[in-house]
Image (cartoon, rainbow, N blue to C red):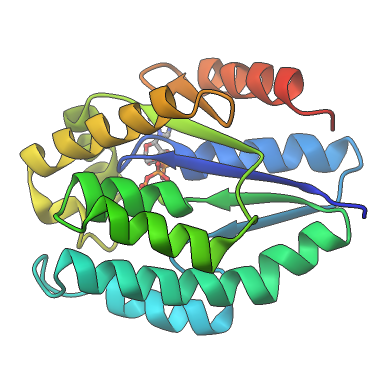
Amino acid sequence: MTRGSFISFEGGEGAGKSTQIRRLADRLQSAGHDIVLTREPGGSPGAETIRDLLVNGEADRWSPVTETLLMYAARRDHLERVIRPALDRGAVVLCDRFSDSTRAYQGAGGDAPAALIAALEDHVLGDSIPDLTLIFDLPPAVGLARAAARGGAARFESKGLEFHERLRAGFMAIAQGEPKRCALIDANATPDQVSEAVWTVVSTRLAL
Ligand SMILES: Nc1ncnc2c1ncn2[C@@H]1O[C@H](COP(=O)(O)OP(=O)(O)OP(=O)(O)O)[C@@H](O)[C@H]1O
Ligand SMILES: [Mg+2]
């Protein structure tokens, strides 16, 4: 079966994921690839409705387990309606956050059990796992300052520095635990330097 490529962009707030995903999309599109640029939570009409529940409101609006279930409801809709059809037709899917954000935010950052998250990955994702995951790493204070300067919705940004340190450690553990799928990107650099690092990883790991 012809199958496209699935690349996820992960990391804490203000790490530069959205900036770099657009740059990679432009570069791959110029090279003639069919690109689907999407994001989580959200990415399909139903999942965007669930996103509104997740990203707005008070920091403690949902418990980590409730958040995990909402995230996975949204993720399933996104997979069924956007990601899997795109991969089936051979597109390159670039996703701004995916399942590792649940492991990091609700698992490492919150108290959602790793076994619950693993079971959801198993049953809800099946084999729809990214071929490559770029994990953008930088000190949380730097990322939060960037995100604050940018402005916008901020339910997770308001959770405090200690939460964001746990997130960073969570993402780091994912990168170390699954080195074949994941690549750690030093995001504490200029946008052009980060783009080069992204391109080096994408072009060496994937046969696009
Ligand atoms: N390498 C960089 N150096 C300095 N500033 C940057 C860099 N990359 C992005 N920025 C700026 O930092 C802000 C956050 O970047 P961006 O939105 O790409 O991060 P993000 O990882 O998508 O954040 P979030 O998780 O909050 O969506 C933006 O204003 C962006 O222009
Ligand atoms: Mg973003």
